[in-house]
Amino acid sequence: MENQEIIVRVATPADKGYSQLITDEMEASAKARGTGIAKRSPEYIAKKMEEGKAVIALTKDGAWVGFCYIEEWSHGKFVANSGLIVSPAFRKSGVAKSIKQRIFALSREKYPESKIFGLTTGLAVMKINSDLGYEPVTYSELTDDEEFWAGCKSCVNYEILMSKGRKNCMCTAMLYDPKDHYEPVETAQDFKQHSKLYERFMRLKQSKFLKPFLKKESNGGGSGSGGRSIFRSLFHL
Image 1 (cartoon, rainbow, N blue to C red):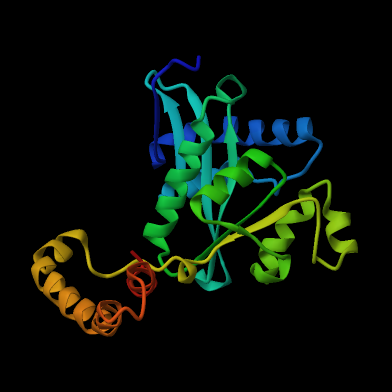
Image 2: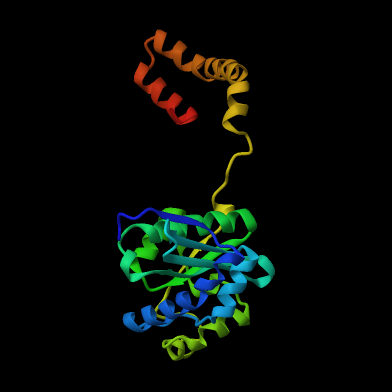
């Protein structure tokens, strides 16, 4: 099964026929792990497909492999990549990572300013999230949207969550904040177009900053390695 070609893509309304299969596997997986997840109906999953807010994995022959969807909270301030599930036949094949990467990219496309968060008990998911830039956080840094937390009522650990004042539970909270991942506006092409000007600027800058150290070295007052060390610290070379 692992050698079959797997296609990971954004789900469409044409995929709604997989909704019941997906929700059945979500429930079975939660029971097998002895942990809970917010229970979703086939209709809810189908709606996510219609909205283009889900990612599905299928074999080339159309067999269902995996799924994940996006939820929006606090008026778009937060989004969650929820319900990650993989068919038992395809687990440990690396497809879960591919699904997470695609749903993360889709979230960034649709909600570029939103914080992306997740609650999970799975170590494999934590590792994938970490590779994507998520960081472990306290529950207080997540959405305070009551509707989100109401979704935990179907979880077997809901009493634990409430007994701790909704500040902690069996799940680990992880968050990706786009403000912590600055991306320069200038593209690689822009840099190439301005590279000669940049090189001239750096030569002038280096000359200005290094002149006192070079003069000191020529007079025997300092070592070349000291000048180079300061140069590296100034220009991160």
